Length: 154
Image (cartoon, rainbow, N blue to C red):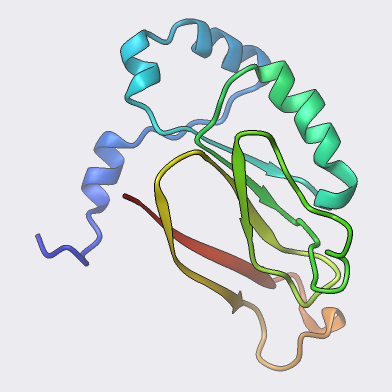
């Protein structure tokens, strides 16, 4: 298979992605073996609805409660713009924060990446929705704006 081709069958066979409640996550975590822990790549996602307002809640209520070190913590709706980043440096101990500012008052994506060897291949703004302006009143319910991070572990 050519290295640039996407192998959907491989992903379906070897990557297991599941959603958990705090209780079901605790049960799953308690059943992990040492092999599972050492040979897993774990991702946590949260719709943060403003990273500036809710980072402390994410750390204290979710991450401390789950008591698990994730390789990547993804956050959506960060609401980080170039103008509101002054004086606010998002950080979680043991993680690097990667993001692209959003031109809107909402939206935005960021990733806290654990101490992994990684390379950012691309950071860019991608606009989805109706053609035209970025005026929020003209979006009509489409996914409006996302930021993509293409990360390669080395």
